[in-house]
Length: 236
Ligand code: SF4
Image 1 (cartoon, rainbow, N blue to C red):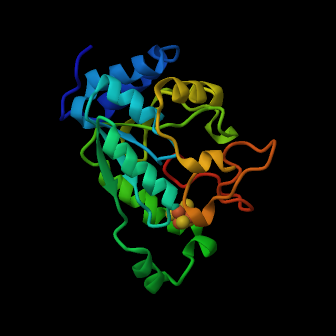
Image 2: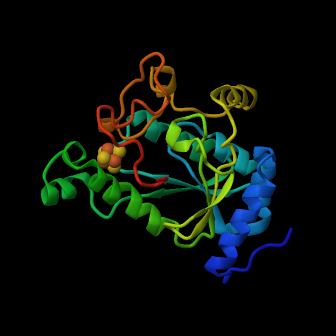
């Protein structure tokens, strides 16, 4: 396996991503992350919503001190911030917290209060999409915890793919995992999880846009409930 050059161009990275997506489709999560670590080194990071620390834990096993990027939108549950702090304290990772350009108060002053209720796409663009775009600038590849079983919109998630929006390699090492696989890994390795997961939440996002899920609903049904919106723009 050869590391890609820092100055590798978009076409080269895209081709690399597409080939790896095919070659690694049946590989384990650790093998996928090992490929990422060997290929991109420090130009690779993991993003985490702090719903759980599974991908961060997996990545730290193949790349100790790996950058773990968390987006602090200013709207998180205290439990999510607590999970982030615990991850930074006990895991062998370099925790990086990204923040939007404006505080919630500054955004309220410019756009009016509760923008999330009136225009969630704009709120997500300001508080998630833009800060992540800026925060990922120094990386060639980023890993996510996306899984195919989470929702129909994620059913075709490649284990390695090309993120055209950010022009980076996007790695989803647990794309093929089920919730049972996640639970088993958490139990086996004592991985930190967000306490809200045992309080009726199946997917944890910003507090104003997240509710508990009902029996029979898919994991992301509690996000932007009652709206057509299913993704925040980071993955769609
Ligand atoms: Fe705003 Fe809700 Fe998006 Fe969070 S999830 S950035 S509160 S619209």
